[in-house]
Image (cartoon, rainbow, N blue to C red; front, side, top):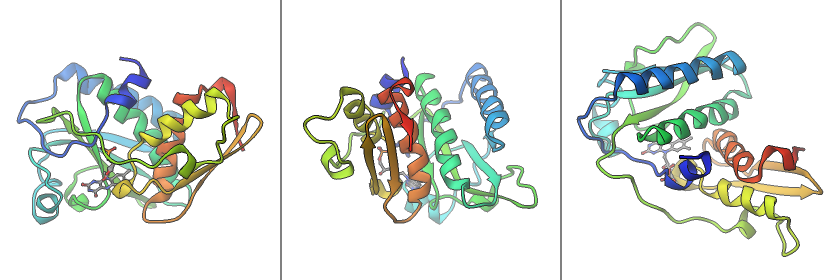
Length: 221
Ligand SMILES: Cc1cc2nc3c(=O)[nH]c(=O)nc-3n(C[C@H](O)[C@H](O)[C@H](O)COP(=O)(O)O)c2cc1C
């Protein structure tokens, strides 16, 4: 499965089967997390056999069932942390999809404090990502159009359209899709347009745009 196919296939999944994730798949996710952490300075951690974070009223409210594995997204406190977590965390989400697993970004509806993830002084864990074999593959949802999230007119190049199409398939908090892209030649400038966690959304959306557009076709403004 290519990354573009993973983007197409991915939907948030909140109900999982009680089927353990194979050791080789956990190893592949850990190896990817290690290399993303080395590049970014984040501390993305693959947590397994840990039901506490996804039990209790919040998880129930979020309709989560059978979550015992997740990605703990930890990094140094600072203004760029959320965007960075979005950009790097989504790489693990797409890898999980390629491995046949399902995921859901979770900022609110989990008990993050119950997690045994390592969080050092000066760090925080704004979000976790559930991981496992879904009861289903999830469902397509409503989406904005390219015209609502960008300046793309009829003359927009193919790579820009493809980037925007991939960006519109990105998960965003409450499906808010509060971002806007502008283009000047091959320079693309994305902005979060406000709203809850829209900085984290922006990191996720930028990764999708890069995959859809092809990094060789543009630079970030
Ligand atoms: C930063 C972020 C935080 C999220 N937090 C939660 C959450 O706390 N609980 C939940 O059930 N879903 C959460 N989601 C999942 C979104 O609701 C979901 O991505 C959105 O509705 C779009 O659906 P899709 O992922 O199937 O494309 C979050 C998504 C993102 C990107």
